[in-house]
Amino acid sequence: MHILWDFDGTLFNTYPAFTETMYKLLKPEIRKEHIFEQLKVSFSHAARTFELTEEDIAVFKKQEKALSPVLKPPFPYAEEVLRYASKNVIMTHKPRNEVEAILKHYRWEHYFDEIVAGDDGFPRKPHPAAYEYLHRVHRIDLAIGDRELDILPARELGIKTCLFQNDAAGADFYLNDYRLFIDKIAASF
Image 1 (cartoon, rainbow, N blue to C red):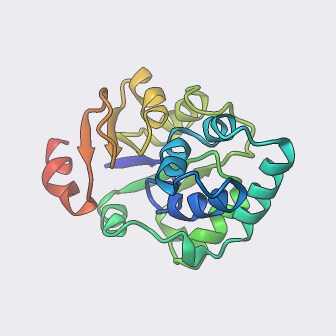
Image 2: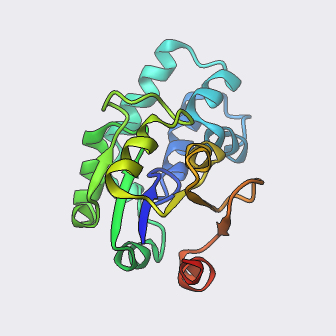
């Protein structure tokens, strides 16, 4: 099975660290749960919702980049799914150097045949260009992401989709825990 992975919120549990970083920029009466919900839509959505200035955005990005990979751990059992797959690729908006630093910290670099990162020149999701490229080169069987915008390009290309910890309509499969991958998804291929 060839799997295309999103990074933040799918392979790595980064949103709690992102939430904490944004919380420090905002008024204390804004609940962390509300920040988390907005960030899960997208960073630009959260920035608009909380009326972040360009300066606020620059501060957030600088602080987020400085966070230790220890604060961005992999989701439990994701590594078992990586081992199960015959090929794994990543498509993320995150800059390549940040992706590689986290993968190196957890010694996961060897699991991935290719990474398309946010600074590689492809249009942002949900534009399908990066997915088209990865599918052409690697013949993707399944795209896994935590947000609807992660699965829209795959659906457009006829690739099976899985939403992780998200029950929005439109995915072929849904997982809240990677322990269930073999029973719920792998058996379908």
